[in-house]
Image 1: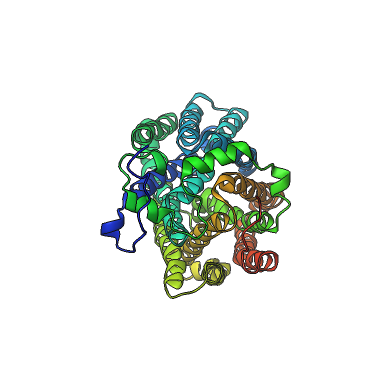
Image 2: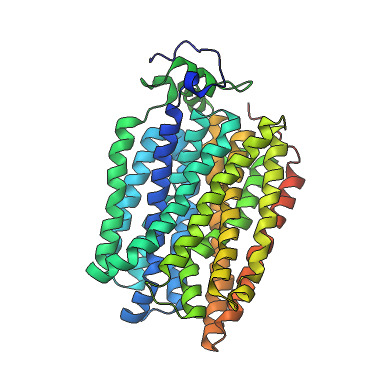
Length: 450
C-alpha cells in the first residue's frame, strides 16, 4: 500500500492536490495517437494498392468492413476483459497485440490477406477505448473526466495528422511494406513506458494522499480502485443485464449514429480530395493534416466546455447535454462542404475540419456519459457495448451505402454525387443522436446496478 492509504481532504489548488493523474492522461493520449496512426495507414496507401494490386473501391470497402466487423466484436470482448484483468494488464495486452497485427500487414498482398490482417488489428485495437475510459474513471473526479477524455481522445486527431505527414513519404522511400512495419513498431515503445509508469491509484507510489483524496472526492465515490476491482470480481454484470438499462442504450445509440461519420472521414477523406480535386498522394497531406489539427483543438475545447459550465454551478447532466447539443449544430454545415469547395478547396477543408472538430468534442462527452451513469466496475463493459454499436454502424454505412454508392457513381463518372449524399448523412447524424439520447435519459440518472 502506498502513501495514499490515508485520504486527505480534497482541495481545488492543483499545487496542493498534485498532478500525477495528468501524467497518466498523457500515457492514454500517446496510446490513442498510436492506435489511430496504425488504423489510418491504409487510407494513404489506397492509390498504391489500386495501381499495383488493381484494387477497386469494393475491394477497399471489403477490407475496411473486415476491420470494422472485427473491431465491433473486439469491443464487446475487450470491455469484459479489461474489467476482469484491470487497466494495467488489459491495456498492455491490447497494445502489444495491435502493434504486432499492424506490422503483419507487410507480409500479405492479397485482398483476403489484408482482410485477415485488418481483422486482427480491429480485434486488438478495440481494447484502447474501454481501457482508457476505465482509466479516466479511476484517476479523475467526475468534473474533470470530460476534459481528461478530450485530451486523450485528441490522440485520435494527432494520429490522423501524423499519418498523412509520414505515410506517403515512408511509402515513397521504402515502400508500403516498410510503412506498416515502422508504424506498427511504435506501439512497443509505448508499452515500455506503460508497464514502468502505470499502477492503479491506490497502489501508486508517486501519488500523494491529497491527490488520491481529490480523485475520490465525488459524493458516493468508490474509495479505492483496488476495492472497486475486488467488488467487480465478486459481482460482474452480464451484457444482458447491462442492456436492460436505458443508460446503456442511450450511449450505444449515440455511438451507432455518430461513430460511422468519423470512420468516413478517417478512411475516405484522402480519396475525396483526390477524386474531386485531383490531388496526388503527397498533395493531400497538408489538407488532411489541417482537418485533424482542427479536430484535435475542437476535441480539447469540447472537454473544457462542460467543465466550464459545471464550474458555474450547472448540474453535470445539463452541462454535458448542452455541450453536446452545441456540437451537434456545429456539424450541420458539412452538408455544404462541396459547394464551398467549388469556390476554393480550402473552404471545403475548413468546413470538414469544423465538422471533425465537433465530432471530437462530441466524442469526449459521449464517452464521459458512461462514467457519469455507471460505476467504475462497469465502465469498460458499457464502453465496449457502445463501441461495438458504433463499429456496427460503420459496417452498415460501408456495406449498404459506401460500397454500392461509391462503386456505382464512380463507374458513371459522378463520384461527387456519392460524396454529396455522404455529407448530407454526416450533417444530420448528431442532432438525431442527441434527440434519441435525450428521450432515453433526460437527466442522465445513474444506473442502479447494485
